[in-house]
Length: 326
Image (cartoon, rainbow, N blue to C red):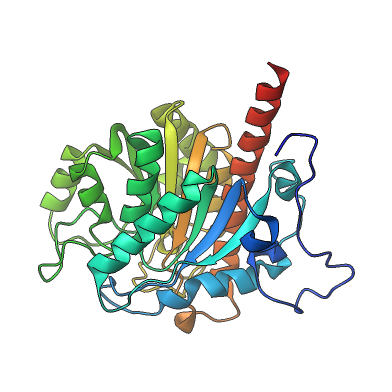
């Protein structure tokens, strides 16, 4: 698509009520309706890797339902993301709920196919197990990537019950496989009890820096975003967001809630502060609507995905304009 072509945007909510029609993300067209997309929003309804409360397999569709209220213009970033680039809903990646290894392979293959079209991915989980195959696929295209991991937990443990692939292990596997740039790794929003101090020691050896939720409270979103930008530089960046990085007051609908988390406002402001980073793909995971009420969690997740999509759309439009000017 050239800068002169107009992307197909959301359904006009002044003509068709928001609650009517299929719940694609932000009421955008389906991928099969537009052929190709610059940003493909895809769901992964998988939660067989959880260690506590299940239900995140229903997260993607809950986020889509909550996203009916999103609007085409993002004033916080002064951008109309769906006019800058073609964003489309690619539906769900159907994975085997009884075989984690097979599910991981299926997600990786589907991500390879979508990235191969030139799209960036905005993935809606599902549990955090899916971050590993997504990172594998992104690294095939960009090489080892910088990672910002928003989460209450480290997710760098070794195994659970002997299983290597779970929602608590994806980033240890990613470091072991060499698909992350270990000079630019950060956890953001971590808090709560650990199994032991060795958890932190092992995590540091892998290259991760940590910004706790208390750090964000004391230092503020702008300072934290600036620190993260400096750590990332111009590297290709992947952002993985476990919605439990938010306090349970802002995200009760998740599988492993921890007290003392970020507010949704802090999360959104930090993401907006990362707009200059080279964001190549992202995910939002661990929304478990069975524990939600009044769509609190899925609304927060839909706005989180909206900010990430806006960042990618702005960068795609700017790169296209630069290429056509040469």
